[in-house]
Length: 306
Length: 306
Image 1 (cartoon, each protein chain N blue to C red):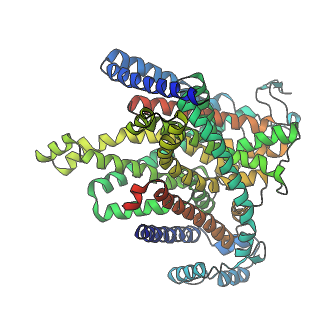
Image 2: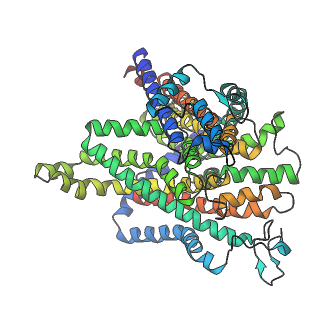
Image 3: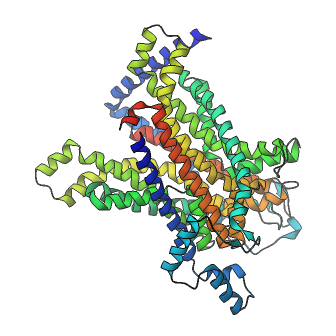
């Protein structure tokens, strides 16, 4: 048993050495960089499908929140309904098509995910760059505020804010943006502090570049790559957080099917209609998984040293 | 070390004060009158006024804030309207259940993720490594409320070997604890793997191997110990997140802990109870993070000196 570890440690070390050398050579070859882009694009494919489904799906499969179809209650996936249509993912306890709900839910997830990341990202970029570049009391106040916010488990703070604001898609975005900006701010600040010490920034400063020129041309661009990397991690977390809030009834309103709300809806029908909870949750898991794998590849691509 | 302890303790108190203030403000910025919302539609103006007086909502904000801080300092949190008993004793009666759940999840998380992470690092680049990375990505991607429902569907409804809700015996603990542990397993496995890969190629590991230590001794005494610091940081943060996750998992499984109390209190619009249950979780979170910080000193003597 003891001896088996040595060769594997050696092998791993070997592989690592070769891998970094290989990467260094490769980075000089544009041809390989393009191949990397193609591979990256392939990993983005599931996400493209999700975005397209969220945008166009609800147009193709109609959903009417007030229509009930009691003749087609709790039908399993693939059933042909009395009106001749096929319920590919089954129907729920009032005869609503589960596929239509899943597509509606995709829209909520996409909207909340994208809007939250945009808002939290912009707040984080501005506060982080200002704190890092300016320093002084602004930096102290902002980072103390960040520490205080991080004293809450993030879902708990989101629950508190969402409960106070009441269930609506806009309020969920607000609650999640208010809880997530801190992460972006910290990353932007760290990137700013690192960029301030780089030779080209010091050179620009010594040549008399104005502070605003340094910010726009040198500091902010250097924060973008780390912010994008953190955004790919955060967007998955935000989508899960939205679904969790909606599961608790604090997210999307009752007439707006979201994945979390649909899963909660099926909770009481596990005995005779497993598909009501299963399908939306499966969609949610697959999307978050796709975001996670894409995020990993993107990080490798943007920062091969990691 | 003692100076470090005092500074760190003081900072924790500051962060707690900030968190208390956020909770205070969040509940009082409610659009509309909390007293009216608590009593619901159909309540008389006199009832609302009486409740406002009882909760102290008729005072000015600074007076309310002062009273709030002194109440917290004296651990006097008032009476729950919904349960008609002191809020503090209700929270206290639920602490044990949450601690049991989070503790079991933490143990499961550690016991599963360390072997997985070590195996993945030592067999880097093999199919086993890929398999483990898929498992850990799944752990992070699958939302816990849905995973919980799927486990109920399989183990409680179909196989009928475990109960779906309740809290009386060990069997009730299995499904919620596994559900709560999954994200932890996902995060920790990745972290143990990358942490170990980072230190495996350090000079001191090579030196230890060169002087003839057995591979297992090198792994345990040189590599693992240095890997532990980043791991402990994340374990600390994740233990805190277990408390956040417990809010969701306890709701799914009807587990009678503090997390479910938060959600019930929100649904009952019992603001004193919301305030205290969230406060309790936040305090626990801060204390856990403090303990984690202090444990660095034990693991890495360099930090003790600073």
